Image 1 (cartoon, rainbow, N blue to C red):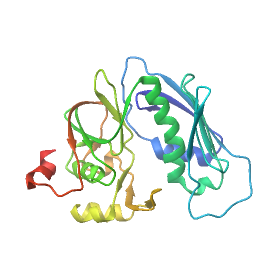
Image 2 (cartoon, rainbow, N blue to C red):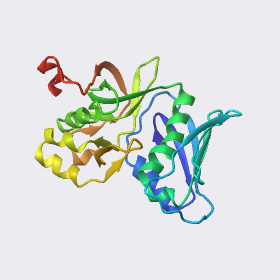
Image 3 (cartoon, rainbow, N blue to C red):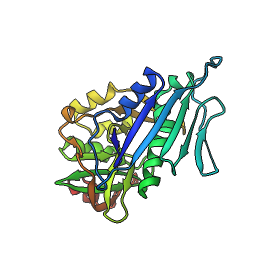
Image 4 (cartoon, rainbow, N blue to C red):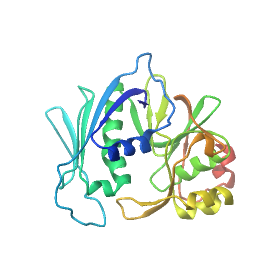
Length: 260
């Protein structure tokens, strides 16, 4: 599976884990960053069966490192251990954690995939969104809650290419940008600015709650056939950067999507 410029081989120890991988990365374009794509191996396994512990939220991930390894782990049986040197990772998920597919994907699987891809290819990770047009990319930079996802949604609905809404990886020499475009996270209050037909679809999507406890609204899994815009079919050369802020614009025209 081509992701973030690399060829990823996922070895899944159960059908549930395979479905999580397909849900996270299925149908994405094959972005090319170099003449030869590095190969990565990610093994996903279920933890040995333990006594269920009913809980409203999944255990928090803590970061560890040493002996050339990177690790994210919980106080339960969930962990991801990476060896950037060997371009390999082992992700172990408990049955309790599987009850929270968003957190399993976002905090364990993507931790492994994103870190391996960035370390092996010397990519610059950015907390940003990226949209494109005519094979050119525009980075949208801003703090959490500033409106990057909302701006990306409006661009997508107006026919622009969608590359990523939260994590973008850029090659320092060529400024090619890549990311994972399967998900958009928009807050409920942002739907007031979205056309009614699109807002109706988004409202039927699952609601996720991030670690801060603040609800970031609906999550929608876009596909090229389901929206006016498309996934960016190639890594986009970054041709500009625009800062996004939740503060009111000083000049009205400075916040218009048409400017983007």
